[in-house]
Image (cartoon, rainbow, N blue to C red; front, side, top):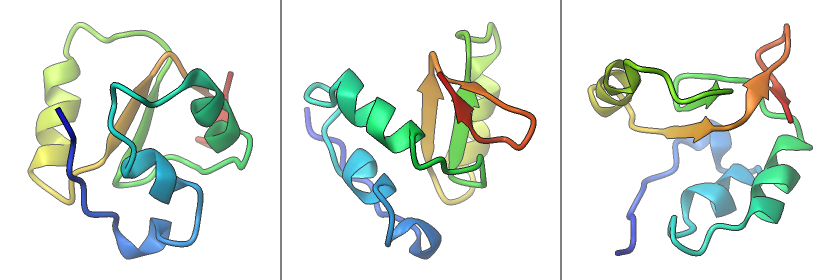
Length: 85
């Protein structure tokens, strides 16, 4: 199954493009690490979750009701909302 995602303008010049346009079944851990090394702060279309929250449906619904986006589970965030592996 290929995921078709439109990338918002603010992410169009970063590696987020390749993350957003890569099918989930072929996305590698190395690509996620490379993305997190940039580091891109959380925003309206990007959310980091260290652990799978019990109420993940709230985050999914919030993104689905706005611009869409990417939720990276297994990636913590630092004090500046940037990824911390």
